[in-house]
Amino acid sequence: MGDTSNSFCIDTTHIAPLNQFFKDAGSGTLASFSYIEPAFGHNDEHPGSGQSIFTGQAQVANILNQFMNSKAWADSVFFLSYDEGGGPYDHVPPVPGHSNDKTLTVDMGFLPGGSIPDISTIAVNPDSYKPCLDNGPPDSNGNPTPTAHCDLLASDPGAQSTDAPAVQGFAAQLGFRLPNLVISPFTRKHYVSHVPMDHTAILKFVESRFIGPSAHLTNRDAAQPDLLDFFDFTNMPWKTPPAASSIPVPPAAGSTCTPASM
Image 1 (tube, helix red, strand yellow):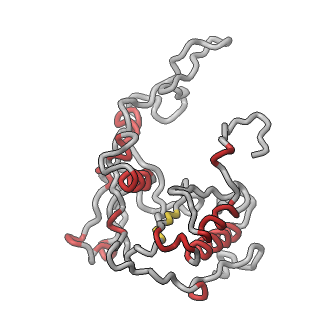
Image 2 (cartoon, rainbow, N blue to C red):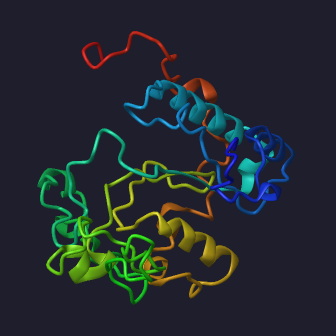
Image 3 (cartoon, rainbow, N blue to C red):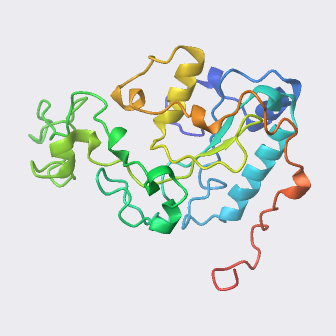
């Protein structure tokens, strides 16, 4: 990482350059689970960070095209998501009881009952702890220090007893709504899932696949769907992957594409 303090505590025996992923996918020797992290500040698509988001889009296109045309395609699933909302935040607040306040009825008319399930089913406290103020032994200045479960400053959200996180713990909200794209030969064509989920649903999918349906780390992933509604494992809808020529090519970094000209 080039970090002299080794703050990231990275186990280098479990990290490889992206080219290794391409080699393993091409030879059909991918690990059972791989996690791809983009180059921070270079092609991770963070708006306003001085990088062109087109660079990240081109990287994603490259990864997916190589993956879809590799030996790994026949029996793999690729999940693509983001760690936060970035600049273009969604207009629907991901708060229990308010998930669908600004979702138009016309958008939901094709669904049974004409409604989208609220996210309250997955907004659960992962453990028995709620946000609390630093309460460890005082430091040299007499200020309390953070502990494993109590690390808030008096100015932090959740520090006041009436704050939503203090009342409901980490079930108070989930964060910004994000895409979860599922790319696989088994993915249903033209399918959009309306099942509430968060990032840990991907963990639930892995747990169900490799361990068992009751396996979980905390109450958070235990409450998630296993994402099996995305798949058709019988008919293999995308046995032949989409041709690269049918996939739009992202604009080049530095192009003249601007909000005014889109």
